[in-house]
Image (cartoon, rainbow, N blue to C red; front, top):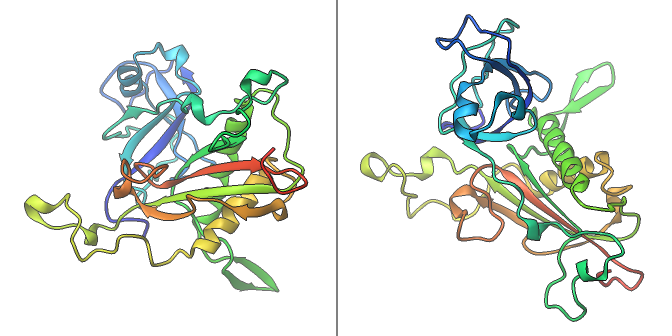
Length: 285
């Protein structure tokens, strides 16, 4: 089980169909195809466009490509495969904000775009926000016939989320080229805090004093790192994860309740990934 409470999850609008009218919905409006990777990285859902139109303030033709978030039960994805449409609820629906401009570093010949020499902090060459439940890679189960498969069902969806998020991030960086040399890496994983860590009644949103400050249970950090680094290779961010020669802070796992107090911790499960190319001496380029 992923969590006993709804988790803030990303919904991507894949396509809009202004002329479709869904018999499953009360409204007589247009429809959209959406993907919830945390439910299924391959399946798309045809559903009512009205909630997405109301939140975004956009016309239906402008919805494709937009990303929203909602508080969803990841343990109970829709089971109806009827392509005529589904009536889905999107509690807490909101429009995902754009990636902050300061997280993107232009990579071209314009000297004004390069961090000045002697700066206290060199901006990362690439920053990626991957939203979804991080899945560990490493433990395998023998299924017979000499075949081994990943024990965790979460690893494939997580690697898909990281890969697609990384592709989108590098496409926003002008002049981006695949990293070919040594790389420094920062990974800030955000995990959902279990319901058992909270009080009851009027304290239902208050973390118990006895609750652990950081995730000290499975999944193991090294297995999360392995899955994430492999996905960055799939996204062609670098040629091989063997290029990662240095880990930089922040690096580790935090709970989503640390959002707003710990830098780069998200308000829902996911990871902030930052990469710096290094020169022959091991210094930032």
